[in-house]
Image 1 (cartoon, rainbow, N blue to C red):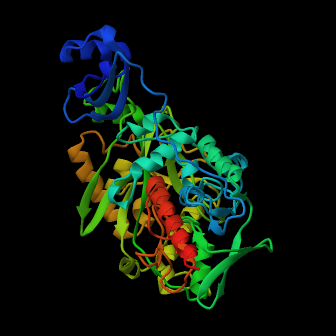
Image 2 (image 1 turned 90 degrees about the vertical axis):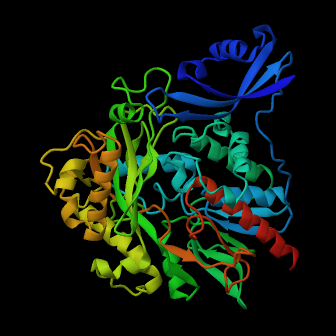
Image 3 (image 1 turned 180 degrees about the vertical axis):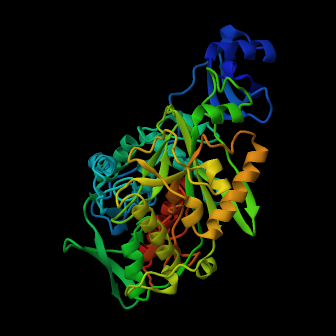
Length: 528
């Protein structure tokens, strides 16, 4: 017999299967000898009060053993010889589009400008050790996309986008821990996600699809208002409808679209800094205990949001027990992001602290647009990103050293004469962020920090350091598509996909969008 229970229990009980069985026996009247196994279906932490509780949904197996299947498997058949679809980009949008194409009987041809996930790791290490950025192999470009080496968080609020559980089950099928099916904020970890990504690629290839690395699209092949394939920098030609999943940092793609008058528009995003605290301090604040998290609780998370002068100010991509990493994707850029290993065991916790930006805010900032042949209204937000990243690069001595300022000094508009220890391995330099960040951003950040400090005593502190800049929160453009067919508004056979097209905001939402684009591509081919 199988029973399911909703439990609200102490962390030490939730962490120990024997103690959990004893609790079930006492509170639910079950015989311990009859409990063959327990399986946690949902898990979340309630830290709103001084006594911390863990909320569990538990399945209890009485006098029977559980089945081996902890997740639902998707069947992927061989698609050799089937009609092909070109998938540009091997991030979450592209990988899940390719897997869904196979599931529905079409053959994906995946072209990725960067390297495979293991070779890519070597180039990422050089950003810190040699202060050099490979424009085709970095935190944004390469197998797995921006998510592969920036945490692997799978939490999304966008349940209405599609089947989140399907995405999580596919991750489990390719090697992710089944804990992601239960956790309220599922997380694979930067150390484990590359293996999962490689397994996805192996599935694609084993089923007759193709994956080509260091293969960069140079342009679309367009005939009679239809996209019929792509050309590559290397001289290759790949024919078929195109799912474009190039990610939020493929600025050369946006410039090509602008030069060729393909419909897109500037899109709002959020810009700010990475804010890093000692993880022990965040544990003390969030768990209301000077001893921190103790033996049974994970590194604490936080989430802040407020409104300042008509714009949102909020935390973004919080990484408990994590690291701040250099996330530039080209020359003359300093960009920062956050990541956590699966253990979330570092001495620091960080998050993006950002201000909402609308396209019509850009002129009011009085920052001139880049003077190049591609200057166009739809690229204004992207060019603003580029300018801030270049300022940071200059502040850091034209290296990957990042400008930084203590949090309370920023609020008081004081230069930090020394900086705390940081996880950012490329190095920090003290810089007056309050002075050179656009006033539109700096004033709202300062007010937001005061509000957050009042709601969580100890959060506003000089033990925390702000590291600039966090600019890649989402795409700066939206490639326009028909919401019904998922095709571009003027070009048939082109399916703008995921975060880079302006329709997703993280791994899971990009994966869901990839599946939807694949389904639309199948419908398109069926009518040819």
